[in-house]
Length: 303
View 1: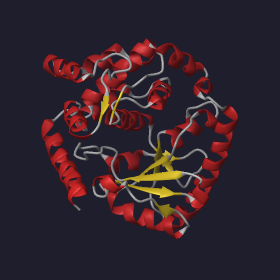
View 2: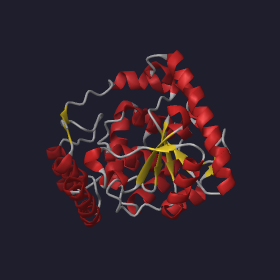
View 3: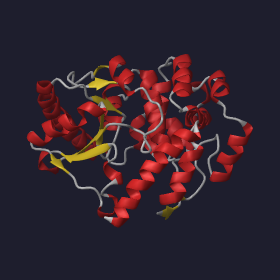
View 4: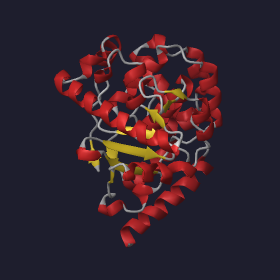
């Protein structure tokens, strides 16, 4: 993979804060897609309620109903669920029993693609659902997944599902954005809408530090502050700011504390793995996760 990332202009994102529909190319198609999502969620909710398993919706599937003026304004290519590791196989089995189909990983990623997630196709091929056991692909940041589910509240439209509280949701979106090197357009709007509701910033700073997310939180929130300064208190950025040496290394790798954060070509493989190391607060966490991921990738090539 080697491609140039073209971000949406900050002015257009700023306008979308007032009207998220401005980012939707085809409102009629987006409305139809939302009807499909709602049908899939209703089916999933009914089946998972029978199992009494805690399943957390996050990103678009959660925010569309709670933070966007109209659900169709949050487009998404799939829906993301987060479950505890002990529940992952049971959730997948329940959905397979209800007619969902498990999608095979790409032929060259048979081991690494399944480290922490399963991809399921809804009946009729309507939508892809990703069931995550962790958000971090490297998987060794000390994120309190159990605490996130304990603090979660029922989904406003599908009460069999849970949604994170805003402080946790902010950190989950930041983590996912960091894994994708801040290249996902909707992450910026999600973060802006979460920030506009005045989340518990002290809690965000504290959990970011404890979960090893301070570096990527600083980059993401700095980019957000450039889009709309009122959304992020300066004291939050000061509390999260990495050392001068780390900022120099991040700049060398193409990450800067201004929107759109990433200023380098998109590359996978070893290059992505090393850049992810710079986004880790504790490189020991990165080394553990990178070793596991690299071993899985090696098995992809050998098996």
